[in-house]
Length: 373
Image (tube, rainbow, N blue to C red; front, side):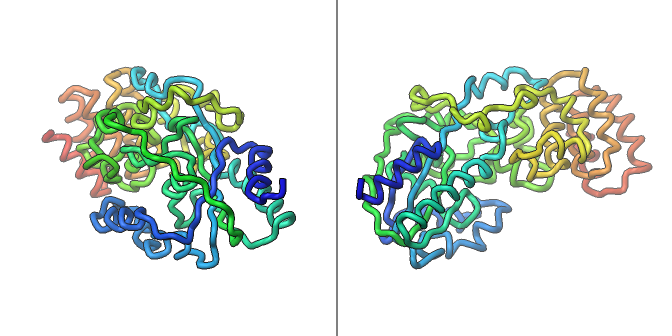
């Protein structure tokens, strides 16, 4: 086996990667135009880093001029249950499949570093490794490398693993033989577009992140806009609807990596329990979890919107406790949840009690908004 690409592939599979491909980074590509349009239309919302790093992001060589090849690797995180089933249990929390286990960044980066060290020692050349942490458009590169194609929901779809691939990348100065790019196999299907609760797709292959539940529950820092709150349902971190409904998932396999399996504590946890978390308990529960990065306040904000959508008056005690929360964003979400679950008289009584003590203008605005809703 003298071909360096074959050697790298064999080593990658040995390290636990299930998908492997190589793309040249020396050619122009249409992903640049799509990204520029996305940012120009402000569809990135408050993700300012996308605009700030735009010129480095539009092409791999804009970030590293010396790169010649991109080694694209995929780690299967296929779930062992239907991700949409939890949506029927409205007093339980729905957490995106990718976030229910350990942080994939840590797992994938460890494998990438091992592969990179081996490459430098055995093959030479310079390289850089990436796991969704740099201005590198990994999904278009994965398509060029033959791992899959970007579906109408803009996410990567694999013929072998469906929707469930974590991506890792190695840019290298080695001139490796590129693989054949995967072609689009979506056909006339529009299941991913039609299931989206918030109509986040202006057209096939276009996403407006500002309308996406994953963006709102993870990236957005303030109160979630009123127009989206009821559409959240019980989704408290991310949304899998467009991924889970894809027909190509019939070929998906359950993840072999134990770290990608949902933790027992995150398999349909109760909203009431999650709403009680203080910062210390939040950090303990989500240690080594990607959920930890949004912080306790944003997380409990999301939980309270789900509580408001639960239709369960038994959760009113949970809401009442959060009306006095130290965080204004949590108190504001509690006001909204109270308005959804309580009678008009009870809401008015709580509102009048808050009027004399509440000083945060955002929370007071929430009380006034719900009072006239």
